[in-house]
Amino acid sequence: MIARRPLLGAGLALPFIHPAAAQGAWPSRTVRIVVPYPPAGSTDVLTRILAERLQQQLGQTFVIENRAGAGGNIGMDAVAKAENDGYTIGSATIGHFSINQYLYSRMSFDSDKDFAPISLTWELPNAFVVSSQHVPAKTLQEFIAWAKQKRGGLSFGSPGVGTTPHLSGALFNARAGLTADHVPFRGAAQTIPAMLSGDVTFALDNLSSYVPVIQEGRMRALAVTSPERVPSLPDVPTMAEAGIPDFVVTSWAAFVFPAGTPRPIVDKLNAAMKVVAADESVQRRFQQIGAKALWSTPEAVTERSHKERPMWQEAVRISGARAD
Image 1 (tube, rainbow, N blue to C red):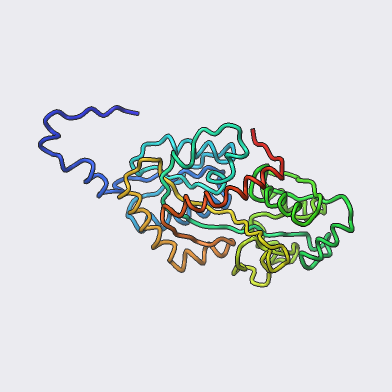
Image 2: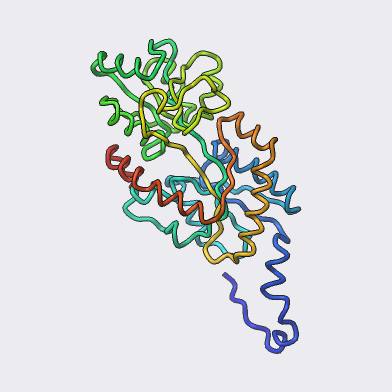
């Protein structure tokens, strides 16, 4: 970081140019959004949609920087350590707010202290999916009965240890009284072929990756983990409707600045995001991949992260997951 020395004398003559004018002019140059996951995943795709619209809304370029690794911790650590001038945004997910602190024995940042939340951006439900060819069940209760009669050989896939699909699967096992082995993959691109070949029994994975194979009929969605049914699969019941109460599990995300970013900048971006989230074309693009566009106050981000932590802490305990 370059030290900025005060300009002797100049401060007396021009007190109005800093910091109020700088904040008022934001953004006056390119804004960087750090996506802490690889390209082409749901976080990357949805962030790019928002960046495109924010660019139109605010008249400056918003560029995406993918910095993957350690469950997204590497990218978010870079955000925490960035200048708090409004020109670095982190596309943080539920993992950074409510899960990773229970998976890792040491975290390089504190989500409550090192970030200034801006707004919730989206939520993405998980779907309970099975292969249409290898699993005869047409409903979730039929699946549970079939799985218990099968007695062994059950497995579920996920995009990795400690992800919401992994933890959702572990929670489902506990709630349904099943014993299914966890099979981690690098993503849905590997999980789907394994399920279609019969090597993996089910998945409780991010809906966006499975909509095409469900619509083709090769897979069957037995439930979604959102509080309401999703527009892209209106005939698929929620977990509560399918007989598993108190199982609302969504992967959600929020934009954050580094802590200490001036509140006028936070508020200006928050207002722009409210306009973007309300845009029907944005909502349709999100719905096409199974997501729901969100907007919230900065304070609501913190409230949601705190509210969900006990559930995820319990899920990590049940799963036995460790990511060190």
